[in-house]
Length: 373
Image 1 (spheres, rainbow, N blue to C red):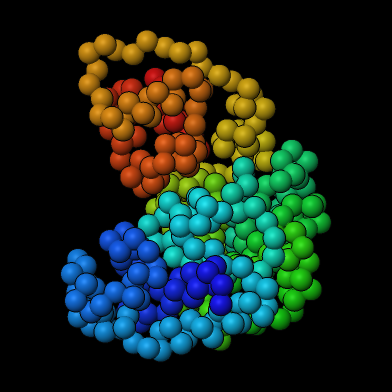
Image 2: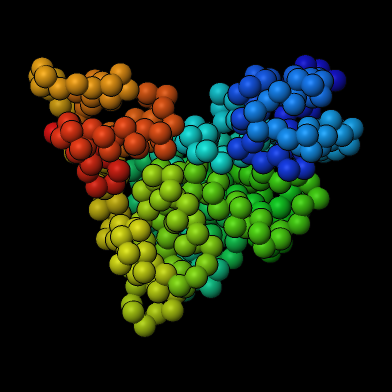
């Protein structure tokens, strides 16, 4: 086994420890510094890690953890599956900023997760022609302006599959986030589309082989759909459903959320209308409006702000000053872009931005864009 395989073995093993989720795994990594060291540390050293109970240490040291990881690594290698660990440079940077991002996921295909623009499209499994046609018309326009935009969805019936197929039709890369292992495909009737996606996008899952598409897995995978994107668009949804959960998660991640409105009498527009009415989503008016709100339109791309003199008596923290310096020569920046360029997690940056707003130094524009006052 080569060094890279060795590393993957311990990375996979970290996800196979009973009782250790993604947040706990990150905390352990911050203390120990290396996934291999976790499994080569003695019981005494592990007990010294804050937050690790004796029971969790016992789970880490169980021999079957590494044995299960070896079996999964064998499956990964035999099926030409890539693994992405949270510390890898090509791990999706938008997703990495989310506190509960998967510590590791599996991927079959080829794409750039860190494309300049990423859009997630979600909706009901019982989509109507209204929603299906929206997917086609919207993605045709996006492909004509930004042909490298990555489209993310869940490969489910309804809006998901129509979003994937429209992306393929117009040459956009598209990734399906699955709620099961990569040894199966659910629903199986989407196999042909999934096969086509592998050539221009692919299939992603945080679940190991042998994992069934259980209901709770669909809810869990929604955080990846939300976290990977710059914006989440809910196309059609009833008053309850996975799409609304995805929208809630996206809002918690400070992502832009849009909802396609519909008639009050249409069952699968109730959820979208509710999101708009409760100010949890921006009303999707048109592709042009979407681009403007995201700052992706031509005018927003061209605008630059001249350097300006700041109030000499204004007291800023180091982090606040870094934000001001970044915005000094730029018209406006999206919170995700600010987070990436300043290497500050979006959830942490949001608090600092709020402080700057209260000091009247910056202003929050539509679409989670920020600019100097």
